[in-house]
Length: 504
Image 1: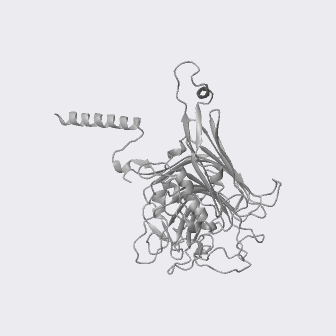
Image 2: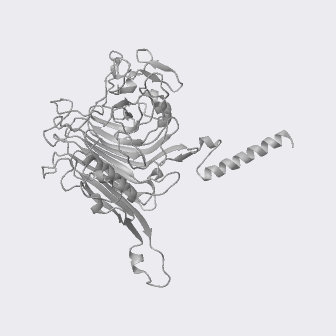
Image 3: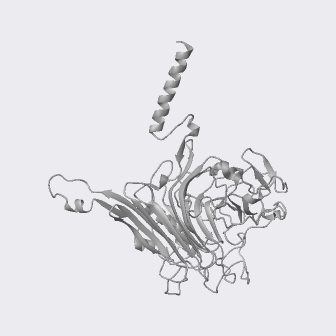
């Protein structure tokens, strides 16, 4: 066969292959370039919802249950069934009037389980420990909601609430993983007095089918002593989906108050087993595959309706992991484990605290997409305005000076935080390049090369130790309204997905 004919046949075969691949939603020149979803519900399209809610105090513990609320864990998980058609007239009048049925897997009694109440599979020693009880309850709810899948089963999307108040005289939070006694006062932490670290009220409207719409909600307040709806803290997450079509739309609202000025509300995809970012208990979640740098992407649609004020550290994306300073994976030892966070703050009111005149709030290095690394002392090339702030772990023995240490109380173990801002240096990864991108009035569908970006970011490690595997056991978005009372944030999220190479 002539060379021209061979070339023609080869091109024709390639064209046919690409057409078939396009038909099935995949174009794969090399299988290494083909991606699959790491979450159990890719793009939030399953009618049978799997959703849970958790609440924490300042140091990611429970501390004390709210009266009549039970342990602060609850779930809304159900299967949806379609009535089978019957032969003959009027053989199934109920089927005609109720063509679909929702069968919930978790009862209200189970959602209200609290300290001292046993449940199947729970560890006896956890039933009288308020912190352990919540962790065990999450595992129990996860078992009720679990979906068998390949390569691993999965349980639910997670809504996370957190109260930033801390009573320093109560001595409930460790300092870099080490227990400390009462102390104070401490102006870093808001607290109106005894009981300020309380868990919120959690109310639940179970998902129902209203015509063609599936709808449900969680909502409540941290204010336990008032009846008026004015000037109190408040949160709500409502979800809605058209049966058989499109994505779930999760609508979030968070309001701070004078008593509770520091509150957090996140929508999370967490590990289905092992530790999630920020915890030292085994958790449950949506990640049937743990994404690892540099090979994963995150897609979602975000519409910010209200921003939450200048103190709202609204995270376009927040990724959390845990590894020790010597690069080894975490094992539950809160004195040597270190939570690592990277957060892109979308709020255009958030300033860059990293600056050339005072570099202690900058990471020691910035790495550009082409691999070139510049030190923070290189004032001509270091992109200071791309960073809000960096803080090093409290147990880092060789942290480069000058530096600041991360808040030692807000995680059970030491933590390291790197917060970035919209800037042209992040554009190569699909992140916003200008302040205001994706903010109020600019809803967008994002496709972020989170794996490649997270591989390039600076995280502390002891000199001479093997590089840690950067496996991100939590991928979330939402807001942390930081010590700013009477502010309201509101946003919707849909189409959420995490993509990893098929080889995983």
